[in-house]
Amino acid sequence: MKLKNNTYKVQSTISNDVRTQIGMKVSIIGLVVNLGLFVLKILAGYFSGSIAMVADAVNNLSDFASAIIVLISFKISARPADREHPFGHARFEYIASAIVAMFILFLGFELGKSSIEKIINPSTISVSWFFYGTLILSILVKTILYYYYMQQSKIIDSIVIKATAKDCLSDIIVNLGFLTGIFLGKLLGLTIDGYAGILMSIFILYYGISILRQTADQILGQRPDRQIKQLIKQLILEKPGVYGLHDLIIHDYGVDNYFATAHVEVDAAQDIMVSHDILDQIEREVAVKFNINLLLHMDPIDLDNPEQNRWGILVEKLVSSIDSHISIHDFRLQKTDQLLLLIFDLKVPDNQTQSNEELRAEIERSVRKIEPNTKCFITIDRNYASETVDLITGNVQQS
Image (cartoon, rainbow, N blue to C red):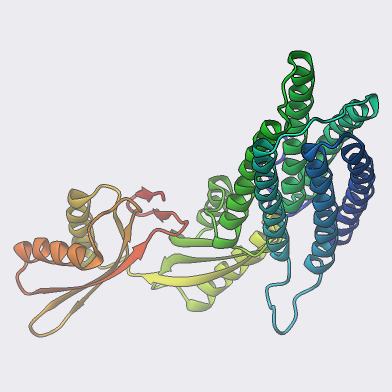
């Protein structure tokens, strides 16, 4: 989560128990408020004959159901890891958020259908002060609830509470439009109840889709924040005995539940136990500072092989001539009686249109122009969420 001073810290400033308590408290408040608004609006809709008001009452009933889902999600998300779910249950919040979005979409569709029927078969509605008062009260209560939800979602970094806050915002917009439409309709002598319902359904569908898209992004997996990548990279590269870093990948398993892997380059001539201790120390520091479970792979590099270094620079230049955003790492040179073997990984950006086979063929052709008896073994790394840093050449390849 981002802090006020623009530093980055993945670890929440509150414990999981406190986070669960806050989430459950927020859910219970939502339950009480939406149940009360449902009762008021269903009465106002019944006495006035307004389909839009009845639909809005059903909206609050769906919000009530959503609050129950949120309540359940916090209970499940707080469960520790078990045999079937070794990475914990924190991602259940994303599932709960998707369910809330589906409720919103269902409501928007049903409201649109009812509103079209109202336009085809219009009827006069009876508007009283109770009707207006219910709408105004709903707007005020939902506004307070929106700001409360947003505040709490930031404190505990909860996507499902943020989704519920967006639902409140859609309710506010819909009720304002409804109130304005009814007032103007009475003033001008027009029956616009059905049209107001259509407008409300469009807003509801829009917010439902936006919540569903955000939740889908979380479930499918997003790029980690560049700032946290930079901080981890900086911590690793500052260590004596580290000569490069590549393939840094961060996995998100829910709030405060992160895992990461990376390849760290060390001197092949250095005692393996010394290199192992360096990597162990890095893993511990990342766990303490960022609450990330980091697993490092040791890549030994030969610093005292002039021919390998010369070929590494040549291949780097050849690759850059194809695409300046492509980089190489894990470069090794082996010789047989007849062939010179060049073994390396190729890091390719998202916008590279050439296939893996085309890239391999083009690089091998270029290499053989320099030395015909050469064979390249190239592993293609398509972009995940990493940076390749070579402290020997000074090259930094971002993705």
